[in-house]
Image 1 (tube, helix red, strand yellow):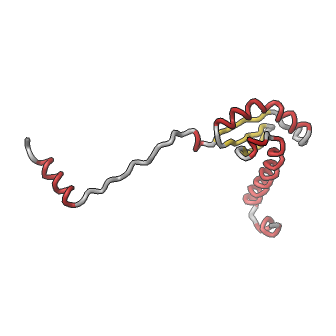
Image 2: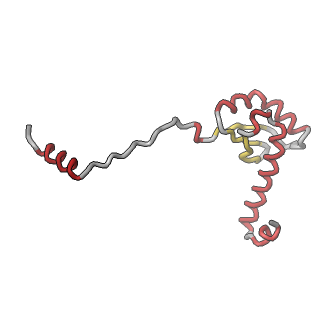
Image 3: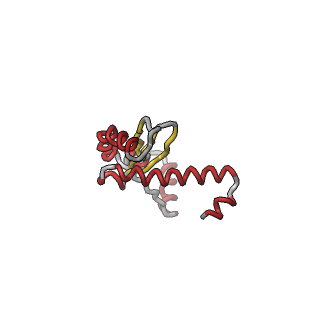
Length: 124
């Protein structure tokens, strides 16, 4: 992986480094999350002291909100994230939209289509 990192142009190198930081931060954060929330939560970003956590379900988000003050304190003291000032929870957009089933398209046979056209032209 080191060879790939050196071959990247400067912009891609910055993206690669940022991705690696998020991956390592994700591992750290999961250690301090409640066990039942760990698999539903990932780090979105960490900028200017604000940690954004992405959670896959509103139910887990509600549970995590109660734990935030304790989590913030543990991350500052135990994990060494001294610059952490706030934690925000964002819910994945797939769970914000209601379950909508796609409409089925109905294909008419040629005979049925011609019959409907004839009926529509008839004056009743």
